[in-house]
Length: 143
Image (tube, rainbow, N blue to C red; front, side, top):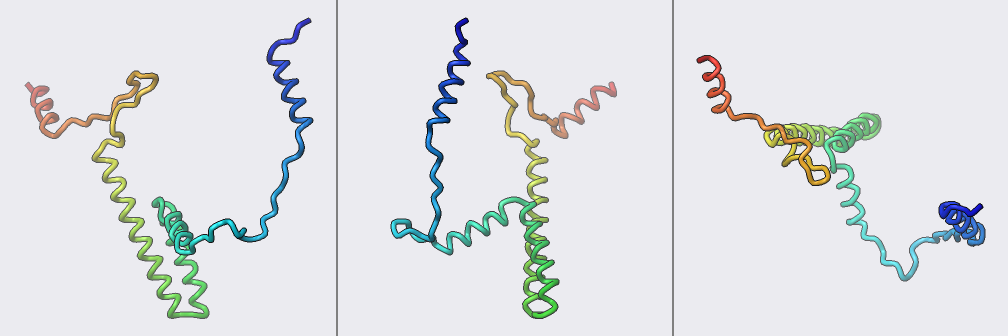
């Protein structure tokens, strides 16, 4: 009985896996001479961008700063005060950012255009009528 093409492909792949040598693990021994050294300012910038990329990340960073200030208050009171103020400022910025995101999402309807699937509109954005249109509709219903 002839085999199906799927069975033949599976056999070929199994033979290829069995005959392939195991992958070589490369052990890193620090920076290689041909690799450029990483700039520490860029690494710090990437870390800061990761900490402030979303509102949730900002809130977590603020909480970590406040908890760190709590533990630092045992030994370094002046430094703990600075860290606590930094945590409060980050928290306030995250709160303001969250309010602005919600306000901008509310005014734009949450979406910029209709939802398309396979070239056809499947969901229109929420079109909230203007105050003028709502008043006109209310007056028409009263008549």
